[in-house]
Image (tube, rainbow, N blue to C red; front, side, top):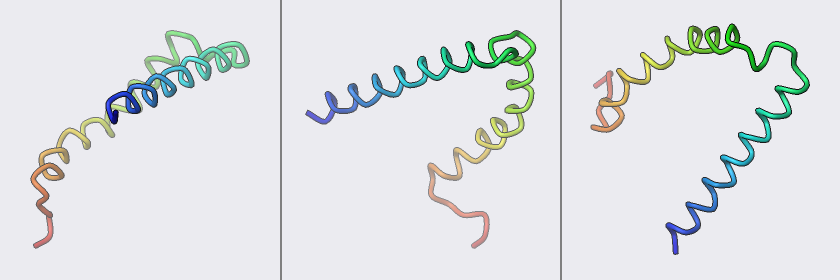
Length: 66
């Protein structure tokens, strides 16, 4: 039963994401452009690298400070 609920929740999230992309593409002039995509990727690289480094720490439940 729990797997079915999760599938419905994930499906709802995907639908909301698609709806947001459609709305922002119609209302914003620079939203669905290649330049904006590269800018978003460039700005999210730092956060992605930090998340990559912190993942093993979080998984093993260790702390930096003893």
